[in-house]
Structure formats: C-alpha cells, structure tokens
Image (cartoon, rainbow, N blue to C red; front, side, top):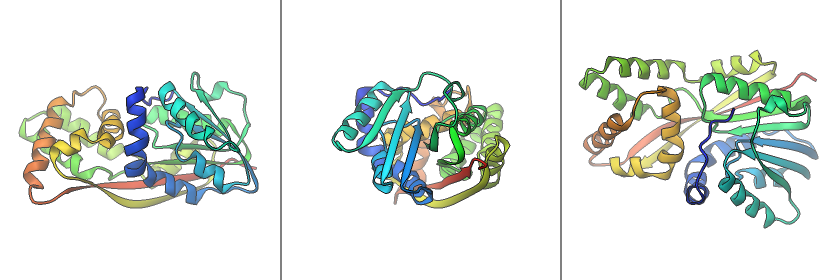
Length: 273
C-alpha cells in the first residue's frame, strides 16, 4: 500500500543526516504545531522512515506511546537506535507488511503521515486506513507538498517538452500540475473517507541549490523530490528531461542559486466522536 522506496543502509543514514534537517523538517514542524493532544496519546506514524519527528512527538505529550511503520528495514533500524538512546521512550518500529485496513480498528488516538509519496488512488487508501485505525474523536495529521511546489522544475519540464515536441510528455506534465493536491482537494479527499473538522495549513518555503548538478545530486532531490516527480509522471522516462533540467538550471541561474519553491501543507482531520 505504501509506495516509499526501501532505503539501503547508506541511504537511511543520508536521509537522517541530510534530508530530515534540510527538507523534511519543513513538514514535521508544521505537523507538530497542529498536533492536538492531552496528557496521553497512542500515535501511529505511517511511513516513518528514520523516525522523524517521533522523539519530538514524545516530548510534546506526557504519556505517549508511538508505533512507526515503514517498508524499509534499514530505516527502521536507524529509528530504533535513536529511540533506544531515550530509554524512557515508549516507541516501537515495525515493518509495514499489509494494508492498514487489515489491522484491528480504533487502536490509536492519532495517526500521522509525513510527506507520503504515492499516487492519488494510493493516497485515498492511506487516508481510509488512517481513519480505520483511529478511535472516535481521534486526529489524523498528513503533511505533504501541495499544488505549486517545485514550480521552477515543472516549468523546465514544460520547456523540455516544447523544445523537443514531446506531446505526450507535455500532456503528462500539465495533467500532473493540474491534479496535484490543493488545500481544497485535500480537504475533499479527507472528508470523502469519513473525516470531519478538516483544517489545512500551508507555509511557503524555499530550497536552495548552487547549480544544476547540485540539484540532481542532492539527497533531497534523489530521495524525496524525484520519487515525487515520478508519481506525477507515471511511466514516462525522466532521464533526458532531468538532463535538460540540470543544464537549464546552470543557464538560467548562472549568477545565483536556484531557490526551489515548496508549498508545505499539513492537514488535520478528526474522526466523528
């Protein structure tokens, strides 16, 4: 169900060291601000990767039990090592092996997902699974890039399609841009699977890159942005378009840094009590 790549041990370490502080923290900080919790909470983190922001969640709630699920064992092992350093923390990490709806219902007060990378159909299944696992009155939090994110790269992909007269690729780019989640569509999706009191917040952020090569080789690009773009564009081969993007960045931003725009969104949704 969850389409996150299975990280190698090296990639898990790179993810924790570079991707979390440089990029994923945009989403984690907004999610933490929107958390509504009393003195106790049982939290499920779907697609937890290396366990961010679980320790911060633990610090926010007096009595918190956190369970993280992810398909990548190396990422989970790193998360377990971090949690073990806090001996008082009640945090457990497990391999995600089945659909969320196959688990026992109403187990958690909160379910969270940070930057899930998946198609629209899979995203709806994720939302439905998160609702299935929440007790009445429970809160789901989903943080993800919303429509308009990575616009500079999207414009260069459009330019590539026009220059090389690639009509099918052009159609795919336009369709992807038009169907990316917005505040309104994300709210509708969550309400459609049975949530209420949906609130979506958005923050504008910028991610700097020194050159086209820096963009292509950056861990954030490799482990987060490119997988996101691939879900937008389906079966299209991105090798040549990305080479064009790399060279175009050097051309257009030769005297400065590319500041990639990111619309950081987070939705809070409640299960009817």
